[in-house]
Amino acid sequence: MAKNLDDLCQRAKDLIDYGKSKEALPIFDEILARDRNHAGALEGRADVLIEQARYPEALEAIERAHKLAPSPELKTKLARALELSGKHEEALRVVDELLAKHKTGPDLLMRGELLLELGRFEEARTALQQARREGDWYYAFEVDVALGLARAAIGLGLAKGALKELKEAEERAEDPRDLDRGLVHQLRALAHVLTGDTGAALDDLVDALAAPGADRQRILGNPQLAPLHETDVWREVSAPGWTAEGRKGEALGPRPAGLADAAFRGGSTLSGCFTGSLPKAPARRSLLRTPRPIQPSLAVCEQVLYLGCDDRHVYAIDLSTGQVSWRFGTGTRITAPPVVAGDLVCFGSEGDALRAIHRLSAEPAWKLSAKRLHEAPLVQHGGQLYGIIGGDLWAVDLATGKRVWKQRTDDSLALPAAVDASGVYYVDPLTGHNGNTLQAFDAQTGKRRWKRKGMIYDAPILAHDRVWIADEGRIVGLDPATGKERWASPDDAPSVTTLLAIDERRIYGWSDDGVFAVSRKKRETAWICSPPRSAIGPCAAAKGKLLFAALHEESATLHAVSAMRGEERWSMEFDAPISALLPCAGKIYVVAGSEVWELS
Image (cartoon, rainbow, N blue to C red; front, top):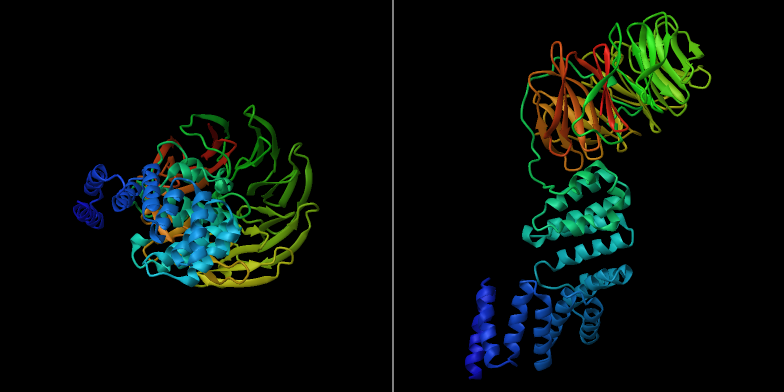
């Protein structure tokens, strides 16, 4: 009888080897009904139950098998069953008993994994390093060790070490099935959180959630991802019903009638990215209607909206009441729209060139006379104001109105400078015959640091420690210190006409195909979408959406699309071309012709 049961047990184990565990389980049950102490059947039954995630039943079976026929192999399986049942301390004691007699790579690996679960990261790292030295024959051993060491490094706050081990795991995986892509993306997201690279962390978070069999609740519940909670992407992926499908948008549209004006972007870095929420399906109200067109720029400070108008006035509108707080007459045409700098509102006008008035009272503060102030938006950063005055790039002290430095340029392009702590960056057409030159200056002294010639017709964007430009159809990211190329869009990406905005994860551009997004980390096109036949107008990225205006001959449509997938969320028609838009405090302010609208 015993021989017959042994033969039957071997037959069931062969079924497991052929992937037929469900057929094997009834055979093991039949054997145990005839001999409840058959160790081989208990072991086989435990193997099947582990496959089926029935861990308590598996643990009971393997404990009985080990008592009946103790062996190192059964003890290893006992430790694994204890681990899977959540009994990590007990599993660790069993593994330590095994290692006291004989050190093997797999047992050291299991010890490291148990210590990781217990939060003992330094000990785990030591055990996993020992496992790597011992080695083992099974095909995924080195991959598992590398993933374990990555987890240990993250627990110890060693981001670079974690990223190195994740790369090692990917290189060691001979078969894609050896690698849990979801786990790799989770770990890489955690490593990027440690480095402060929010955009890269969000990229990997989305990929982790999209992986087959991803434990969504466990991933989103990881407290180490807390720094991502306030981002637009986190809000979108953590919403009920989110899926990773449908990332491609509508395809293909006409070439724009003209380039997007860099005035459409906001802030000194010209990134076009704004904080704050956006209305989901907005209603609109008219805030101001003027006799002449309003200039393509808006500024908001402490619930007051500032704008310039072709009627030779600067306006301040109280957003809480919708009423005009004050109106400042310039006497001449406004040549550079107003920008708020602390307690001042600065703007350019013919004759006086550059002027500053007090933000609350509209009382004059100072004026700086020069030959001409070009119609490029002014930019303020670090106590200085930057603009194109009399054909030169000027830096002006905001407190006194005195010039700090100037650099010779050609003012034939109405482009602003992009400024941050790393310097001042300006596209100058003076130095190129078949293109333009991007020049970098020291913000304090005006000394030129470097220059790059190319087919550059748009103002740069400063974001993520790079200077971003559109050059000969490519999106290029440059090192701010040297001007060397550090990033470039893939060859199969749309040929970019102009950069629109850059947020935490994506770079948005306009091409012959329409509006598109490129993943900054993956360097691949995320989506392409196109409005009906139109040119591109102002754009802004904010809280998981990209806003862009499609300009028609005498009208415009404002589109809001998902920044993640390019799918349209809503659209709104206007009777005049849109020249400016500004997301702020949960609302959107839009200039269309001679009217300012509030969307909420």
